Length: 83
Image 1 (tube, one colour):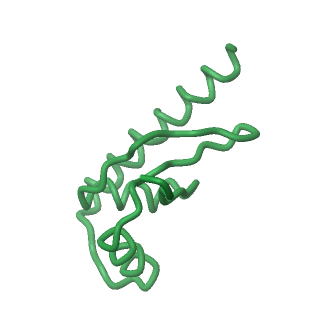
Image 2: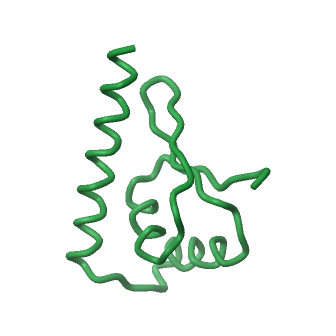
Image 3: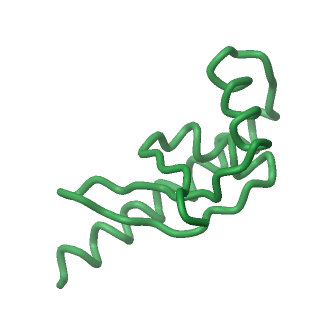
């Protein structure tokens, strides 16, 4: 994808993953982690639902996804620090 959708919002990222949008890769800048997704019409629609609060998710699954993402962020930042 030439123009990926990029966010640093871990909660939005968890929401997108739960809805089946695969995380393509991570980047970092000044110790901030950015999550990259393929930009599609479907992605844009679900993001609009997220920000308009017009959708639901199963709370336990959402929390589990956030925990996994936090570990991923911490591991990524540790690697940067080690380099």
